Length: 261
Image 1 (spheres, rainbow, N blue to C red):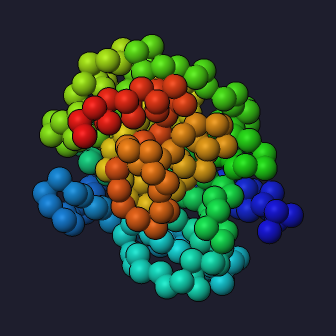
Image 2 (tube, rainbow, N blue to C red):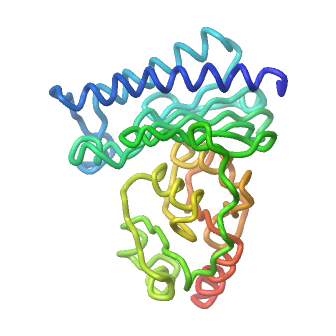
């Protein structure tokens, strides 16, 4: 598998660049927008078309792969978990895509035998692709990223999903007050990027696998912590609260969380 990752990188970059052209050009056209679980959970015809494009390409070149896509089936049996598994979010931040035409991303992750080997997060409007994995490091386009500074919570910004902050989930309002400030973008891919490049010390939200699979690979490659808010490992096929943070910020947040028990 490792011998072919360079080829996979070339293929995925090409697919994502093709997808970007489609997504960005659609901003000038009329979108077919519908809802899924509720009025704020949007999906567009472009989400579905891009996911189908990715799936078609993956199965053309890697027909024995398992695939989890946000807009398609999420069921996997145990044998499928052991295959080359692709996790796709065609447009992360669909509300931003529809309402703002900015602050959204496209994401692909690759896992083998449950281990993350590649993550790709494409900030589409900035045309910046963050990609890499444990055997090569993390890059923004062609520039290798250094691990971010190990900021403590009080020295850095924290990204928090709006429902968790408003509901004061596990005392997160106190975490926000102890930080340098809070940022909410409505796109997990963009918020993962901010932790990867050191703009934020931490990000926490309730996420589904396609929201964090790529970011988890990239963050752990850079030495960041990716766990649940109370410090437990994350099952990559489960939905849960997900915290990505520097080691120091994670310790600070754990202290705050434990004070609620």
